[in-house]
Image (cartoon, rainbow, N blue to C red):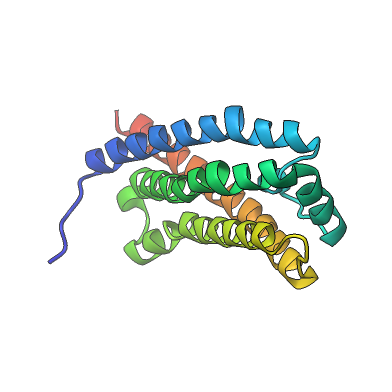
Length: 180
């Protein structure tokens, strides 16, 4: 049996998931990722939306040293296991709330899957990063290329999902203005 979720509940849930995602995001962007950048003197994998090649990956992994690679595995990646799902829940719920009844249900369901595609790409990126760290110092080029492709896919899909959410929220605002 399917439970109906009201538009008000979608809005409330979008805010709740958004605040949780923001909390994790702030920890990563203000603590763990700057720490990794400080250790290595290079931008961490998570912050390379245009990807990277085997030489760049090797340089980063080498510059991180044992301490930095362990920090990546034990601090950054566990946080990045929470963030993609929280962001997808926020964006998907906001998309459903924003478009609401203004969009055919099938299209609405499809649109709310876009954030989950971004989350999947993020998880594939995380799996690749963990695999590269564990494979160090003999990281296969194919693994680097696959992980970099996941990084680029994550960036593109996340940007598209955020843009779709903005469009949905603007549509919601216009609908409210017209109503009253």
